[in-house]
Length: 395
Ligand SMILES: Cc1cc2nc3c(=O)[nH]c(=O)nc-3n(C[C@H](O)[C@H](O)[C@H](O)COP(=O)(O)OP(=O)(O)OC[C@H]3O[C@@H](n4cnc5c(N)ncnc54)[C@H](O)[C@@H]3O)c2cc1C
Image (tube, rainbow, N blue to C red; front, side):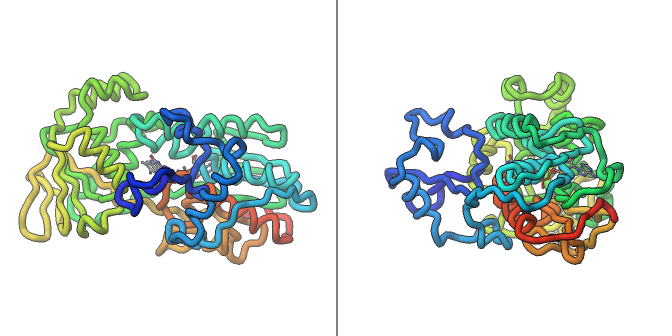
């Protein structure tokens, strides 16, 4: 989650006696406590008051989170507010919807109806996070526990459009799943990260999106998702055996014949969106088979490979695009097509009292799982602190 600091590259890394956990991005999965060889990572209830204070002091005055409007995030005080909404609908059971539900249970006495068009909770944690990152997926256990709460009604396999009305408030946490496009000739033959990731993670309805043609693949994009795709493509049989993927996925990847990957970024290495730790992980797994190309823009995908704006062509059998995602409009709500979000003020949808947004549909498709926790807390704070007219979805 990139929650533990200082991390490699930050001042103080490897020299200080302590590491600190950012409460804004920590997802409470407990993976650090499980893995720490010297029991240094402690839940806040067990840590000494002095350590808790030192941790808080380390993050005081630090950079705003994710450069979004979450800068004024404050740790919630959890005073249950009984005078608020009685019935809240949360649409989408990805991280944002699950954190919003948890926050509603902690802060209000409302009954929460939680729906997802899929049969399982987790959103992109289940169907996006790479299968060689099982500890990241541990947060799903927390999500499953939230479903057991007596004030939660969980309706899996329910699309928001089929919902009844009559809720005091609706939190839309539907994510942002449309792949951004390069806008080059031949792009339709490319495989989007969305399709490839959905296939290797076994999302219901996902089929193999591409025939893998070795020995070289080009991935356009310089974020962590591009690095995930590269790592999975280059995984050998031993790595694949350890991953939670279907035997079909394992067989196709092992036989695929992709031996090298070129990662293409239009800006320099300093501007790349991936984290240092993700790059290190890729290079440790397959460093000699990865080429990082910067300051290059693709112009066309042809039978020869990927043509670039400098007149050269990267010979390759497959093109993958991992240049980000954007939200899509929600019936009855305003939409900002430039940013791919529902316009909102701290989660309250502009001009639609009773409607709220959380997660990627609120802030755009950026930031890891943990950022959605602070984001959902901000939204629920807006919800509990405003009085509103009864709302119904799409009305
Ligand atoms: C490929 C990939 C890998 C990632 N890996 C990591 C990682 O390793 N670590 C990390 O910290 N972050 C990772 N992220 C980022 C992280 O997944 C996101 O921050 C997070 O999932 C966004 O949460 P969300 O709830 O807004 O959206 P989502 O996770 O997309 O959840 C939205 C939910 O809404 C449901 N939904 C949508 N429309 C409807 C509808 N009409 N009716 C009912 N339900 C609906 C969807 O089925 C889904 O379950 C990754 C992202 C991607 C794309």
